[in-house]
Image (cartoon, rainbow, N blue to C red; front, side, top):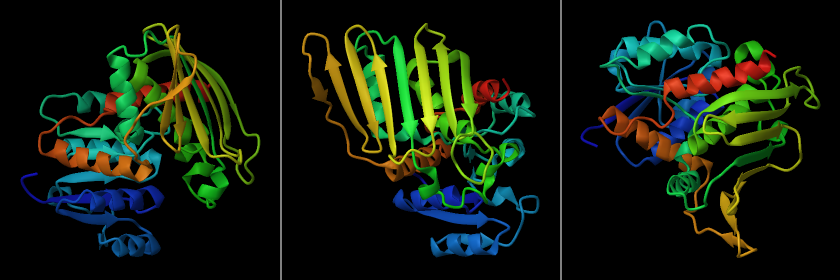
Length: 324
């Protein structure tokens, strides 16, 4: 990378701090700054080596930075990203792209104009080496045709985010609930594997998490443009943190297990599970690789793996279920 970069992280909540750690772990010369209205958040960011600016979004001079990472609540993503694009500043936004469709079409159109800076949305699983490897094998048809994608996803969310009642998660109007906050990760990943989803149906409801009314459970079914079918079952209260992803066809079943990030293949004629050798990496490694990709994109490298247009399509799918 030809020169040091100055990156502004907007929002120093849980995910903002993870992005700060990721840029620190890249191993390149990166100057980090943070804006956040909360004094305690600015203190946490400064402890990670970031300069805590005492300005708000409107008064911050974006031209002082080589790139911006948006970690503010989802209702702010669209206007904040739009400002970056109009001012010529590369931008990476946290997911979901928004909590509603207002302004999204205009943002997509702006992001696709000639001469706009690099941009993307932080669906970080696209940067995990296991998912990279499986996608490459799928593109080379190493498993034969895949006709079904099954995802069974769950976690004890209250353990990982004990403050969930006090943060954006508790409000649909702030982008909360399991579909926008959690399921959208897997809807994005499904499309990275098998192409765009052109139809989705499902049910969602609040069944367990105390102190909130947003949905904590969803059962979704979808059809890919290429003809394959998929399903996603998700809850945020089971005691086991485990995500099972199966890709099924007449020649093989591919099973991915998170958070251990292991992969097994059952091939026709062999009739036993084969564990695929994969690079050992965790969620923080994927965040680090995503940070490195953003720095490279700023210098003219490959585009970010989830474009604003792709994230908008994922948002539209989520809203179709939520608005049923």
